[in-house]
Image (cartoon, rainbow, N blue to C red; front, side):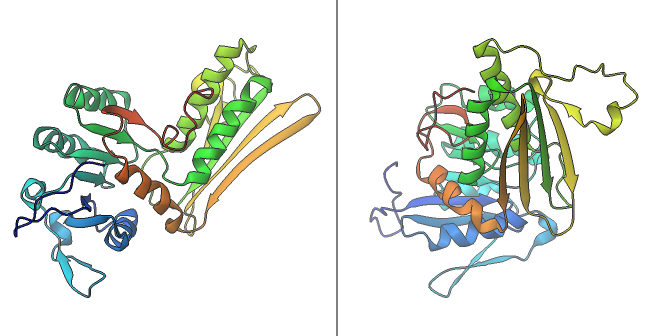
Length: 286
């Protein structure tokens, strides 16, 4: 954790000063409440789209924090780390300001493509700041993907089915893509043979078979009202099926991982993906 920011009275606060970008969204409202309630964090700025104003965030002391639409307010607010849970189309602008203003960035945005990922890496390279991209803040989801990577080299077939709320913009989810990537890396490292079945992409059955992810792993997406975040990884082995599933039943499931990422923001510097290193899981397959 970095040293606390200097307050108007000249005293040094021991709490890490946090800004939430996308504060009026589903995850943003959860994030604001969690940061405001954390004894070692201080919510100093909440950023929303202009159409959302006026917007306020309740403080534990009974006061309110007025949200703003201008991310340029972050340096003046003394933000040390920004949590971006807004949207992919705003991420590059937000990241550019953070990199230039000396603010660590934790990203919980969906739909980050390789081009955007490369742009973020360039922005934060050599700055000494941290940019952490988190496909899923739920610790259980991280553990599920970790277990799947351990099992993947033994499987003959692998299919991932993910289900999220109806308004989720991207498909397949970042969590599903991360699972497929780590399993593919683990299989390649182990020298595993190609997955079965090996039907060609032009097969008449292909439209109902989901998309192909890394290593030929099939990814299936469901968008359904009432859902939060759910994923099931099925690994077929001779004469048996191993199923690894995780369900987030409420957005409170994202809070512990989110707070961990904020508290450890900047360690390590540069662009990092996931929570695995913070949970002691780095070094595993994938």
